[in-house]
Length: 202
Image (tube, rainbow, N blue to C red):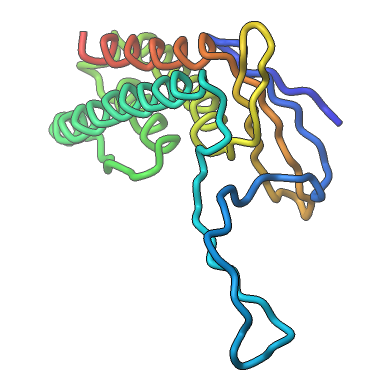
């Protein structure tokens, strides 16, 4: 078992374990009705209703709101990054630097850096571009830990936290990462994404 701490804003703590058999909530709801299977009397048919937020604590709404804000602020930053890259690719082509606008975020960051490195009129801002993309990559990792995990419970301590869990298969091994994030942790990530957007457009 290893402990992995997210870098940058927020104290997003992830504990990664190399073990595939951890309990994860896959369904939450209620049974509306039951009846015998007319084709097989030994079987029972359950009519169930999914209510994924039924047992959430009262403070859960604030966490969902904060996660939504993180989605919005990161989306705004990446949307503007795409627009900038299209303009940069056209500009760089005029100076003999051939690039294309990629789809994956990591590749976008690489192209952004290369254009500022290789295009002579932009060379003076190479350090700015490198720092901006490094900060964005760091934030992207923390953002992914929140967005691409499963909500697996709540910590009702002070301050309360959302318990997240994600699985990854790498090098023929399954690992599970467990994260406890406070409302302030998530809010700081959203603020950081907004600051990145301002720096990009500034």
